[in-house]
Length: 102
Image (cartoon, rainbow, N blue to C red):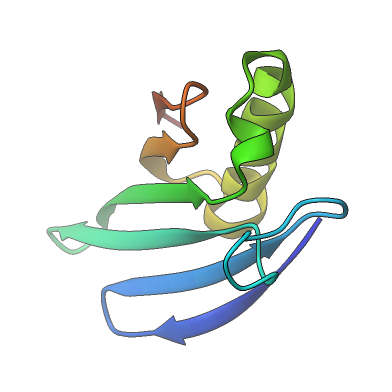
């Protein structure tokens, strides 16, 4: 897995996600994207809302839920780190929500 940053603003980042053997069926490009929105609460507290959208219908198969979960977890670990995070994953039948609290 690898990813590239598409853009960054003062409150958000968008990353393209690439996985071997999977891609967007329309563009044959990135399998999906991760959108990270920073919600600053006061001077030191940050809460992050992260949305991961996977576009390859092969990843919607219920048998691939462990892969979708592992990819999502690894993206959070690499891109967000240990900050408090609300996660929403959109991957057909394998969609889920989670909360990471440090």
